[in-house]
Image (cartoon, rainbow, N blue to C red):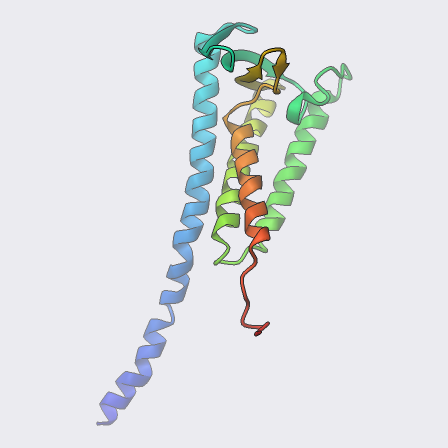
Length: 186
């Protein structure tokens, strides 16, 4: 009978190591999603560079969406694109690295149950890495999606930019719907 009590007492200890394994799937989701964004971003940019000459465009949906091939040496939405300072590339790369440090800091504060925030942060991380890879390799980012209506054009963007935008929206939605915490019972 003492064996049964010892076995029962040992069972919770045996179950304790299972807790870290439960953490791993969400971390895998985080990294796999970020890597998928980087792969899609870099692959799509390679296709554009290979099949669409610089400054050329091809309509996808006439009057609404074109594929273009442009270089963005600035930052988001073409800001600093017209700047001709010799350190522009260094400054934009430094800004991208600072953003990655901010993402890493924020990632440490996201709880396991904040799935939308984790998915959003994965998208942002993948997009930031994709654009940083371009900046480090070329000194600019390849943009290729041109959305427009009549004379109005949105800024040209790429898969990385879209992932960053979707990620930010998901994090914002996660912040809008806070969950109850055990430390704050109602």
